[in-house]
Image 1 (cartoon, rainbow, N blue to C red):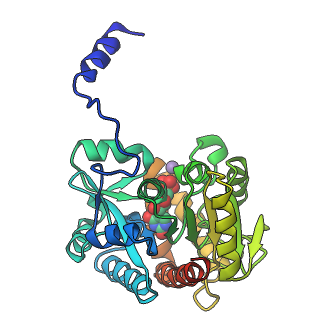
Image 2 (spheres, rainbow, N blue to C red):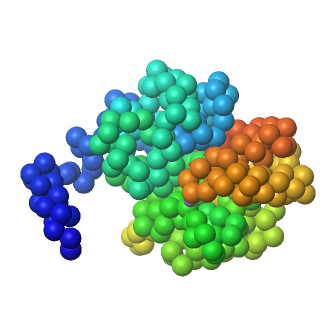
Length: 326
Ligand code: PSU
Ligand code: MN
């Protein structure tokens, strides 16, 4: 090892705390009083991500959707825990002021995946958590279920770029059930399913035998397993947790057909957006927000209203399944 690197590392040791952090994240994260009370009483809590607020939609639509999703969670008797990093502090559950702040910061917040967490915290920054980072924090504080719109996946041409979302690896190592609308059709769905299989992730489709794509009901891929009722979802989560499999579960609920934009229309918008991304040399973590924004523009907002509706119906399903599964 280069000697300069060694001296830097030994120097670093002086600044590190000798304390071993508590496994429940005490002192490392700020849990809102409401979420903290619910967790200590064993009441249902639903985790929600925040990249969809900062990067998924413009202000004030993002704030309205975030509030609407939280309200539905509450109406169904659970406590919403939106997760984000504000001024370097990971927050589990945001106050109305904090939610408003994140929504106005928008794209200036750092899109925070697992790899970014330490740097955002160390620099006192504002981070909007992706699925991977949200799962990490939910698991840390003991929240078993998390609802989102679309998860990341293997990008198209991922076989040469190796652009594979850290959401998939997180699902392979963090025992949280993620309820979502499936994988966005901007991604390579067959390869995403292969990767989830490699990672040992239980991927179930809800009331369909086909794995759903986010913008449309159909993806052309057979779902690895199917669940047909909230009770079945709850039994699946229960079996998974009691066996301590250690991996995550992905439950994909297709978009309600009345909101599902036409497959061909969306597909041609995706092809155009992918071409624009290549021409403008957009890669890495900027690619998903870029493609989503372009597809949204090209489809005149059809994909955006679909996203909002899905987030809302997913919360409802999640609540029903929690009530049954306890
Ligand atoms: N879906 C959206 N908007 C988003 C995302 C998904 O409609 O902003 C985010 C999610 O937070 C997901 C992330 O975890 O994109 C995946 O990004 P990447 O492909 O860079 O891993
Ligand atoms: Mn990526």
